[in-house]
Image (cartoon, rainbow, N blue to C red; front, top):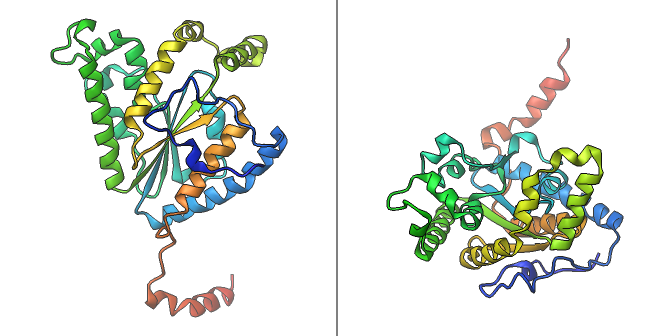
Length: 294
């Protein structure tokens, strides 16, 4: 595998998605990339155990991308070695009637990871400035004051949401949540190929929805909205990472490597020490157990 600098994947305020690569040459075959993921995955799982024992931080991993970008399989492959008690995955679909009776961040607040745990958002609070921006009529379902028609949804409305999201994330970070935001950057051609595979393989048909084709027609709209959202919300405390996603195995490796390199900079995350009165008696506890008879 070629050496990479994870800082190269951080989004800048001048991000232009049309010029951002959807493929990267890591100098490895798919098999080699899969093998390279294994030791990082093992190290991440070990760090998660320390996080759980330490109990003062939580980790929030946010995954965004166009349909077929590989979010589900990335979660499965990168986090498969984690202790199940220390990681929770949430996939945010269309808001329910109850969720629409609250502010748009409410359901995301409810799903945040506890201290000591990883939370993975498969699609995230950013849907509220992406899907709803491409389809502004969805905002009307939120029954907001002063928003009576699509015409009332002005550019200032979206600027306010970007500011609210930045404030939301800033508050989380100040209270011990480590935030990682990954945009899986897929090319339109690769999405076409993946949709065709879903259609050609009977065992994959269940993943397909006619809505996938309709949303694909709005590709450019989505790219514009993603670009602005990322530009406005990639901050020092919660930066966006742009992950070339045309090769799934490369994308998984990159996400795992970024997570591991960043997380291991938190040197205070370690298992708590035993109280001295218990530690001083360890030899006696061992002896008692070894001499135990049934």
